[in-house]
Length: 314
Ligand code: VAH
Image 1 (cartoon, rainbow, N blue to C red):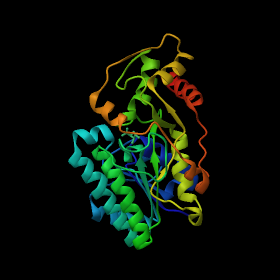
Image 2: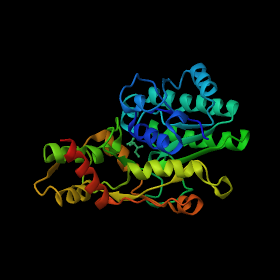
Image 3: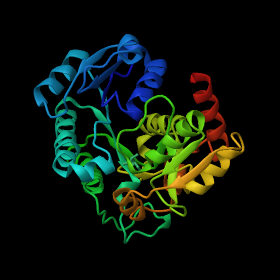
Image 4: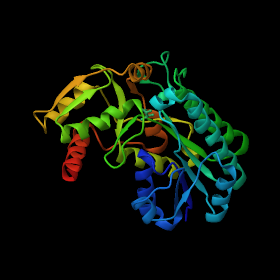
């Protein structure tokens, strides 16, 4: 049975990935960790440890204590916060990853690394962005993601570490709000629609970005880690997307359920500059061919589920 350690379990992806992994592999086999002292279902439903990924001793001790063979490494600083604190973004994004890869090399663990559409830049083809293409990001977040992809491939080729990763698009979810990303608007808009029926969007109309609903993101990570390695021509990292939309499209979908919903714009210059450097729509055919990637949610189905979930909570 797999023995899994998750870093950054308290984050937007980690809080839902932990639950799904525990239901698949057994709660006792999935060790949730985070730098913060967390409470709630994450801690009550299985083993939880405080872990700062910069603490190499604690990381090694936990891997030995729980006999870990797989690490889902989610601890990171997101794009917009990364532009406010670039040195912190580098430290967590690269030194944290380096510590995980070194521990994986020493203890023979597989590693899941979440890259991002942020790994692309202004000179990357914007539409049908190829799996293999130019990557010159203009954010520290993007620099850490490209560096992370290269480091993970190096550890696989040089040391045989089983590293695998995806380039996540913006991820929408209703359990844990994202913390400081450029795509956070696509989560905030649903909460605002349910609570105030009004939203002021930080990205202008016409800003298209790849997006995905959380259940598809979780399934992608697990499906990739369970994939037959002999079928993988790529490893770090696979383009994956489920939809591409701009603020007008998501607002129009919400109005099918909340007709009075109103949206205006107050562009955030940092987020606008970041979003404009990212693709409009990636080509994810490599993921579909090599490990069967096939998302289940489009904008219509995601909107139905997000609004019904949040309205019940109101
Ligand atoms: C961010 N949500 O906005 C993250 C993600 C593709 C976007 O990497 O920084």
